[in-house]
Image (cartoon, rainbow, N blue to C red):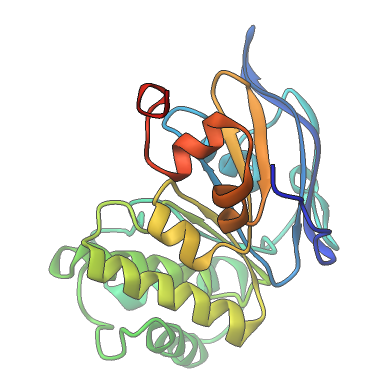
Length: 254
């Protein structure tokens, strides 16, 4: 396994996390840190619990055991008021009856007391940031899948969070659109200095944007590798890790 270099100051700290329902355990005793300003990838095969882990990280689900802390805010279960992070869900999760501008404005209307004029300025700036300037009045049904994900990111950025969670941002996109979205993630990280957590199994995206990662495994019920994705691909001694990064099955590798 590639060496796991020390992370920068932690934006997220997970210790001894156990996830499951009733008697079923999906993940057990998982610990890791996400550095400030890092692009951190949660990866692994289908059914390993990537999106489930993200739902726990953002406080939508409560773990069976362990702690999740957002730097400066303590446990996610104890956060009150506006969350210190933004979230883009896999499908974009836009409100179909609202315009793109109205979708992006939702967090501002829920969590702030800004007047309509100020909200309009913020919304326009966020849409411009993701390359959708001039699309304010469009409905979700009138734009492409890639554009919907950009709107989802714009909404996640509405409150200027220091931390951004992206669930399968490249899923279902054509290669060109996926590359454009990867470039956007890199730009946001470098220009805004924010920490970005990406849940994905898309290898092209993983190698392009990922600085650090953890790899989950369904049978192991936890983390089987951690570090830089490129280093793991080149140096890991674990056949499960090699098979994943090289798109091969155990039979192909002998």
